[in-house]
Length: 344
Image (cartoon, rainbow, N blue to C red; front, side, top):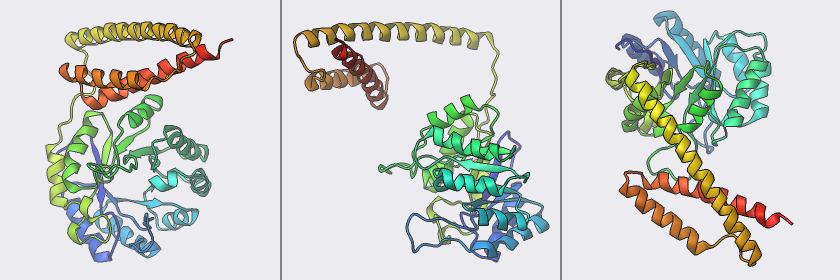
């Protein structure tokens, strides 16, 4: 694999057999992967599926360390898992999305790790809750863990037409803004849920300046015991990584500075326009109050959204963006008018 700023962690969703673990690890090591991941315990959405080989698979990861010189990583969900991993010298631990959503479970893991110097990666909770994600990070920090990173694996949604888990990139972006020194990895396997989505999602993560990728790779993915459709062979993984375009993260050219200055000016104008709109909303709220009118006028609301989406489309703006923007503005207008209605 070519040298990039992207750190790649790869391996099968689940450690299934010793042969499968070693075959996959050898193929990945030959293609430049330095960190090998494999699930030992697999929390499944429903009972009856393959839930991992358990601690019996940890010696297989030790073989990967000893024979191939790779670092090994696996998921932990309980204090017992932590104890087993530490006893077998596992190099890196990660906390899964279901676990990070439960503060009790995260605290249990944090307590088990007190006094231990080991890197821990924390996946985002299954639901889009940034504060819950930050809370999990802070619990590990409170236990004295200093080498902490995060994994963005997307957020569960009822609508799974395209992605298994919606990316909602703005959430990890906001996390990075608040905690800029925190290493951030992207898990395109779990976001996409399909192997054909791994490449474009990986490129998006690089364009957003993620520090690395964690991608599921299996020697025979179609025969995998879990999440077969989102795993790729080591050859395909190597090809995906070779196609990544790693862009400069810092630009100091005069042309970019000028464009940013223009953005700042437009943003100021935009905010002034929104503030003017809210002042008009206050006047409308006062009129409705004086004439005993209800705040929400459904027909008018529908008209604003429909008209805005059409006009935005003519200007090259997506309908999804326009709907979110107009809904947010309308909600603030309703809040302003409710304040007026509540005044005596």
